[in-house]
Structures are given as structure tokens and as C-alpha cells.
Length: 53
Image (cartoon, rainbow, N blue to C red; front, side, top):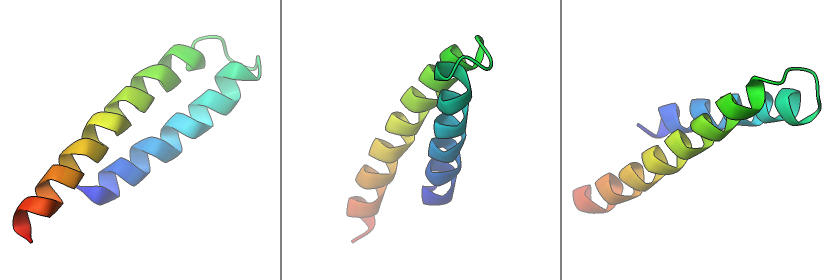
């Protein structure tokens, strides 16, 4: 689960660089969606990690 969160944050950062830099207009919205997916997965991994301890 943590591996997927790292993958999503890297994708969000790359999409953000392209979108906010003016290279691709649609990538900004993709970056926002990926950012929120990352936040949800990060919170789920925190909750799941604490439960197993």
C-alpha cells in the first residue's frame, strides 16, 4: 500500500510540473486528482499501519 502512495505522489509531482509550467493545460487537473488520491492512500496506510502494530 505504501508503494502505491509513493507511485501516486511521484505521478502527481510530475503532472504538476508539466501542468503548472504551462506545457500541458490538462495535466494541472490530473495533478490535483492525483494529489487527493495520494492524500487518501497516505491516510489509509497510516491507519492500516497503526492497526497492525
